Image 1 (tube, helix red, strand yellow):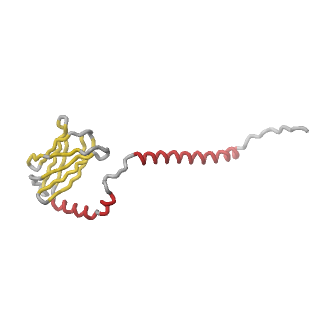
Image 2: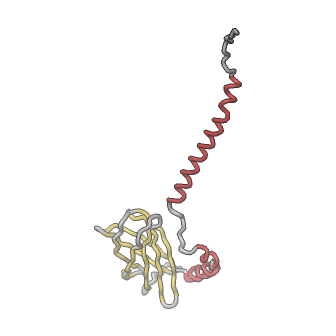
Image 3: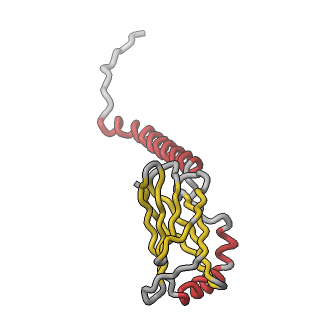
Length: 169
């Protein structure tokens, strides 16, 4: 019996390409799985974006929110808030005027500063009247940056809720 040794032929470019197609498909699916896994991890371990404690209930009562806002707008009170460094602390100044620009004195203010992007305790505020519609509060903040001023101003039976973004340098 004679063995004939035939010369080996190298695969044609079309055959080589065909043999890579399944591996390209598997590699593409692997990339999709890895990227999706990274996105899922960051979605589960980052800030939720919820800014209201009970968003569903607040949505149901949205007409009450609109009514309260209309009552506040009818008062015509105008608020200006500013925070400036003062030694180791900061001085928060709130100026309240009527629609015609007249200063509103004799208000009772309560409020707090809330960090909008960090989970940290609120900073309570104690205001003192400074005259000419100005009210001041001295506050020591743990961090610089953005803070939300949550304020309730009352005068007699009238009240106004204010949320204002402040930047602390």
